[in-house]
Image 1 (cartoon, rainbow, N blue to C red):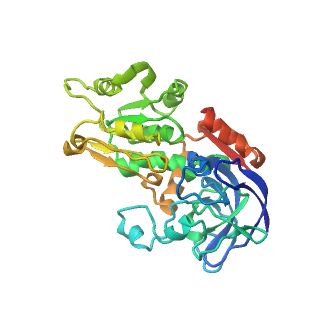
Image 2: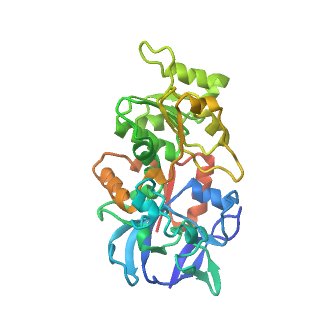
Image 3: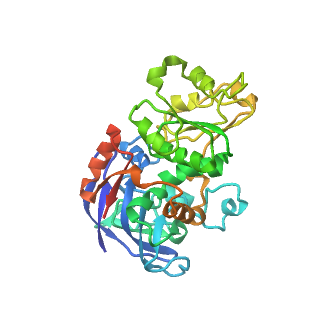
Length: 375
């Protein structure tokens, strides 16, 4: 079938909107009509050429929501008409990783997903005889896509597509880092570095968990108002503090009678290797540090002094907020529908597929929290 897609023809070039061919679902696969998709920094990272695993040509996009149109043989968990969110981190519930309950990183289709193909080793997208790669197993920059059954979360049919698509990555990553990975407790003190699409969701995750002092750190002064909408209690602009930001944060977090200071948790949501090195410093000794690492450039490394770990701190990473997609994503959609979390204010721009490159421009300028393409 012919579908409309924004194709990443080569690294560093704008996406090209064109008609491509999409083959229907094979065994264990599902055809989905994508109704909306978010424009995420990870898509931009791959498009820039900085992603060492980036493949071209490809149909990017991994933050979508849509409706099941058709299913292949053997599919039982979803049916035609179901509302779904594609999962770049699938949940087969059968592989060693899934059954261990120690990680959310399902390994059943990980190798083929990284090669830009379906589990049988082939692509469903093409232009004539030329193959187009899938992206993160989702390819939501197409108005129709095919995914493995285990990479779809069935969700509340009353939820609006142009809002819940954000749960496919940014919302779940931020909130999940707090609840699943860090397991932040009531009354905790936390510092969040970077108040973009992930950081704001970390803030509301902290509020949901009952954190007491929630400090946001960002060089963009406009993010102060944004942070306050989602639970931030204190804002720090490093440009205003100067080189003494660590002592400043440590002093800010001192409680009554506390001579040492320091946060119970820090979350780095910048993807900047230098910031990653900074994040452990203002954490209280013998407390857990959750280090939420955004996507950094190829070859970049992070480091810390041994003292940071010897004193009992934990330095951790998280993927998809530690969420198990088919199990947890429907719950987060329900939280949104129940008003427990906010999404609407973060969808700052919506656009048709033809304007998708404008969405990336808004991201680069820092003018959008999340741009969404509505089909």
